Length: 522
Image (cartoon, rainbow, N blue to C red):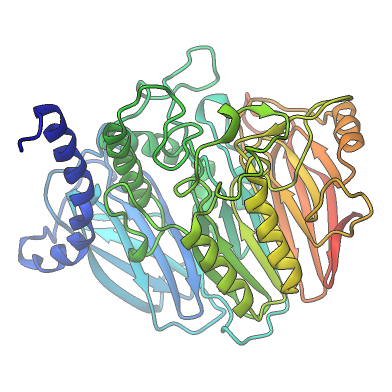
């Protein structure tokens, strides 16, 4: 039996997408071609226009990142050749004493990005790092190793943020973040936005809605030219996960929000998006995508003080129920087969939570978990794109955490362009049920434009949802200070983003005491 030409074409495209797993061989392939790599390159323009970054720290090392791009938003501007890149670590910013160094290769197949996995360092120690390629030297960044796995760390200071839409304004909040004394930064998604430019906004995107690998590379490069974003990356290691706009708005697994999209085309676009994401982030080699698939969920411990489980609520989810949007609760929300995490990731998370010996167990993820009613007065409406649209899956996870007595669960969330503090419970309708955890939600860096305090809206939200302890619509991020006895979240905001240099304001602070779930305003 012969297939039709249309089905053959569809199958061929699927095979092309799925066959992209050979991408994982490229770093080693480059190392096999040492003789072919350019070692004494001379640049007429700075190739380190996108700065430097570090990420995914462990007790003995971390990932160092940069990308060679003398023409950053025009494809990078590098020839289709392999370039040798030297990296150096030093305990002092002047690099008088080199603690460790090495050579790697920037290949055209990975957009001349560089991912160095450093090992063999002492635990709980800061370093400065830089790169050199030919006659060009990169800016200097800072990275640190985490405390030893069994170490009783006394304090951790980190910040988390999400949703930085270039067109809505300036990344001033990230500049303030770079001035804080932080051990880590968590970015919880919407690092870029895929949309076409809007001439009425503060800054404009550099192309129509992005689809191809070059499109995604240029959009990331545009965002990375922002000096505040570069400064925040250079200050300390980042833990990153995506949400939807790194690929396509409100995507659900391999399902587009738009009708009539060819699944093969959608997967090919996802492969482009995932490769560009990997190229531009300080991620380990094990996260390298295979075609349209990329495992981003992972665990990063910080001694015995904290355990970060970075989750992916986009790639493995089933379709949003009820056609997405804000809808009343019904049986579709409670579908026992609906999932945000997928079975494999959910089982991994549960195994890790059981095995954790950490004082604080932190889920870094994208969409709001609390069952928030968005409708004032009679009737109810819930977000179908967030955990309330998958309430059976959420309740199964919260019951597991409660029944297994997982110590001090804290959920960190982005996506929604508002600040929230929520008590977590299995039955959100039962006001008498004690909280079993806390959710801190960070607003956007810029998305949505200038925000506001929204005190009247806060009263309405809290009257409909007594478990909501704080609601605010300004822009910014959340700084967290964690000790064995206490968690403190400071909601750091800027009052405008449509022009530069907004001052930083600490709008609210909340405390969670170890062993006593529920947040209290200070």
